[in-house]
Amino acid sequence: NTEQQALFIIFGGTGDLAQRKLYPSLFNLYKRGYLKNHFAVIGTARRPWTDEHYHEVIKESIADLSDDEEKANDFASHFYYQSHNVNDTNHYVTLRDLADKLDEKYGLCGNRLYYLAMSPRFFGTICEHLKTQEIITKNGYNRVVVEKPFGHDYESAKALDDEIGSVFPERDVFRIDHYLGKEMVQNILAVRFGNSMFNAMWNNRYISNIQITLSEALGVEERAGYYETSGALRDMVQNHILQIVTLLTMNAPVSYSAEDISREKINALKSLKVYNADEVKKNFVRGQYGSDAGLKAYRDEDQVASDSMTETFVAGKLAVENMDFAGVPIYIRTGKRMKEKATRIDVVFKQMPVVVFKDSCLKSDVLTINVDPEPGISIQLNTKKVGQNFDTESIDIGYSLSDEQKAEMPEAYERLILNALRGETMNFARWDELSYSWKFLDSIRKAWDDEDLSVDAFPNYACKTMGPKASDELLEKDGNHWEF
Ligand code: NAD
Image 1 (spheres, rainbow, N blue to C red):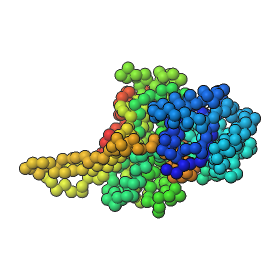
Image 2 (image 1 turned 90 degrees about the vertical axis):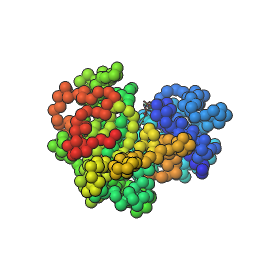
Image 3 (image 1 turned 120 degrees about the vertical axis):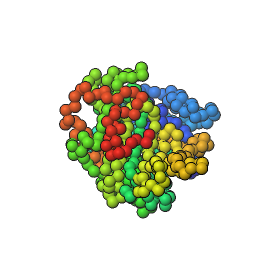
Image 4 (image 1 turned 180 degrees about the horizontal axis):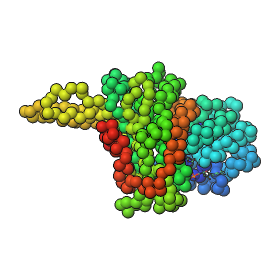
């Protein structure tokens, strides 16, 4: 494992994301030898913390991952805290001095990774100051990692991208979509382009429909303030679900390179049919959870309006209008307070054109990619039922990761941070991809905003269910059903 040399500057170093995801991921990279002696981290935020306090916070956030105190101490000693208000120019001067000092102390060759783990409204001002206060180095690489949400519609995403783009070229902008860092999401391309069996069948001659489910068991928790302005469509569909749709429907890339893959992903997104208002009504379902099983209704959550029309559930039928996928419905579904937490893809193949076995009821073949919580792949096939008679039955052939493999499997953030250190852009969303996905989303959002939906339309699904009835009916209209 080649050691990476870099200075991390984490804006929002006291925040939830930094403590729950970033510090543990950096520690795993350190344990695996990707980070050794030549790295340092500056955490910045408003609070006036000392380095000593910061080290305690770091050690606490990695406590579950370490039983070696010396290692934890050594890791934490690479962390420096800088109290900082993003709007105060003087603070960037102090930040630059500290960055230059650490660069020399740890031999970091001018390599810098700026992680913006705070509200996007600060991205512009941070990037501008990185440039004007010459924190950006001339001798090493300078890469910026940004979190979702990347805008709330096409216009705002474009404005945000312009602000970042005025300082960082596209190749140095790493837009996190952590689903792209998941083992089984990355496996989609391996299954599709590593097996002639699937490669041959991956089109509208053999595939009946594709189903993507990202269900959450939790409600909005303490993120209600943000969620009220976002909703499930912006929070989950624009990024994670559309990225998965593109991996499932893109044409074969010429090579496994960021350039070639992104080109095909963009073509897949360009082929997505953008719906008019009538089509949105026909093809999309929105929902909001009510109270049930002792759980609060969405409208009763803190920071949520009592007549909120924010959707906590979306189901939709997408149409990809290219040669291979025209006519194949892509059903998507995501929501909060659903039956269980799961991320799963079902590719349902067409029934046999003729059934030669009398009285047999053949099921569709289904390829299932389980992303979470139990990563694995399974195939549902028809076989002969054991016995004297010739009956058929549907069986499952399954592969799930062993405990050793799961222990070896990097967490999404760990993988993505290493990608950014290595300058590998493949698992990040490019601006062109975002621009198409926002335009697709905006048409749905506009149709919903223009529709005068009555306040009584919500809540329309109970907690611990798979969403409103209309979500099942969306498939039933086509003679299909949710496999999961
Ligand atoms: P948070 O509120 O816990 O942390 C925000 C951080 O920004 C804090 O460190 C705070 O001190 C700092 N900050 C705020 N205003 C500042 C200012 N004027 N000057 C300097 N520092 C300031 O938020 P979070 O949950 O860590 O999320 C950070 C970003 O990551 C958000 O954009 C969020 O949408 C995104 N995100 C978070 C998660 C998650 O799991 N928490 C997941 C995906 C995306």
